[in-house]
Image (cartoon, rainbow, N blue to C red):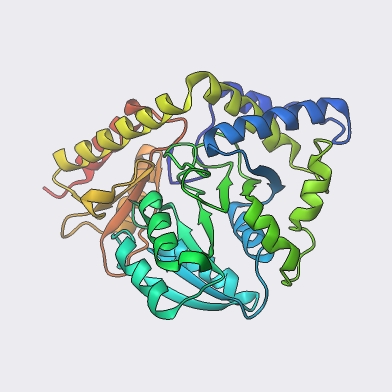
Length: 359
């Protein structure tokens, strides 16, 4: 099977083997050593000196943790959305009683920093701004550096917290947490990290901890105060997903050996390779060319090509699994290319699509 959805992603053979190891005591020294290394290695890719915590949950759980540990019901929040997962971040904040102002951009487009700054100038101050680094529903990567600079420039002394969903980008696409002033950044193990689903990672800045002290949204399982307390002895508050952590530990070891710069460059190459292959087939690219994602490509199909039928044929005839369309009325499929992926994996997709093209 050639799994080409934007997560979960395939596992390298040695990571797959690591996942099958016997369980250990999550309060014992073996776990503490593993936890210590995972945390240190994550900080390298987060490019942060801030705290980084490990949660047993999906990435969405990490997004919820970002909200409930920093905000109170009634807080004004600006949710900048460029697609389905930007909307999800807004919905989580609304579910906990935040007063959410949405600033949405057309699917396929990145957020415009000037439009975000204008919104803050007109309707601020806001307690927090919610951003998406990489939107898998459209194959678009936001310019987080430009957005954070615009937010701080518009807000002045009333600078809001900046909460970033980095789930489908971090680990493959650069995100300089400290240098760009991101207060909370969420990632997920099943994306570029080449690990199984079930682990969310979240960084927390000193400003985020100040907000935590006054935040009144309900929290229990996702209480980062408890995570901080246990992390001081390299443990988690509740039983962690040991199997997923085995995989993440080994995948991070491999990533550290390769190096962040090499990984970012590799994803740039594989993203360009995918886009070039799609163009050669005469198919279209949905995203704004200035903001193509290097982890997922949204492909627009030719007239007469039914996306659901193409997905089914790819799966049943070729063993290739692609993502479905997230754009109403647009004939689209989505091809994931993050983490453990090669040009040969994409060549299989191109060859199959060529055979399925209308004659």
